[in-house]
Amino acid sequence: MADQKWLRNGAVWIILIVALIALWFTFVSGDGAMRKLDFSPDVIADINAGQVERLIVQSGSSDVRVVYTQESDQRDATTVLPPDTNVPETLTAYGIDPRDVAVEVKPASRWGNWIGGLTFLIPMLFLVGIFIFMMRQTQGSNNQAMSFGKSRARLFTGNRPSVTFADVAGVD
Image (cartoon, rainbow, N blue to C red):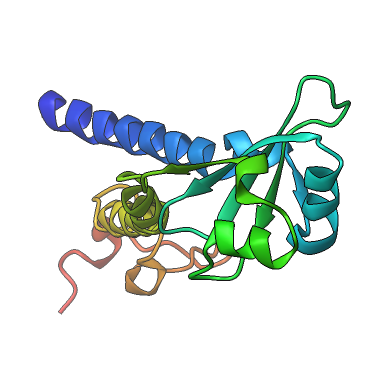
C-alpha cells in the first residue's frame, strides 16, 4: 500500500515538474524581450542607414531576427515576413543590394512541434489526473463527499420517550 502512495505522489510531482518546464518554454522564451518591427518601413530604413549587421531567417518560419551593428544604439529586434518570401528578392524590391546585409538561414527546430504538442497535452493530462483523483476519493470508505444521498441516518429528537427492552419484555 505504501508503494502505491509513493507512486501516486511521485507521479503527481513528475506531472507538476513537466508542467512547469512546459510553462517555462511557453512564457519565458528568448525572443520575449525583443522589439517587434514592421519589415517595410522600419527594417528597410535601418538597413539603408547601415545599422543592420545581419538578418537571421528561421527555416520554415516567417520570423526574421534583425541583428544591429555594435555602433548602433538599437538592440536586436524581430520582424515578420509574409510566408514563402525570398529575403534577397524582397531586399532587391526595396532597392537594397542583398550583399549589403548578411542573410543567415537557420534550420528549423526539431523541438518546436514537440513543445507545441506538450503544451496542449500536459494540461489535458493534468485535468484528467485531477478527475481520476476526485473519482477515487469519492469511492473511499470514510471519505464519502459525493455520497450524501446514500445516508441511512435518522434524525434524533430528544423529546421522544425512549423505550427499552425491559419495558416491552414479556408483553404479548
